[in-house]
Image (cartoon, one colour):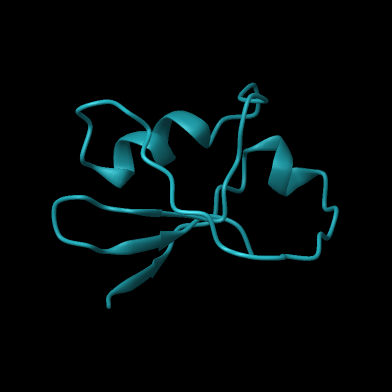
Length: 70
């Protein structure tokens, strides 16, 4: 497995600095034909993106895992 650290430092989930206790892992299909994890990372790593945040993405093309929160 290839793991790439790509912390979304602009997303409010990161900037608030609140620690949470991770209780598990949820794999979720976004239901759209976008296989590239980078497309989500690029659009969610903004100060005005308050709708969602996740700890990581799995790229559908090659299985690379991108860690987006600590």
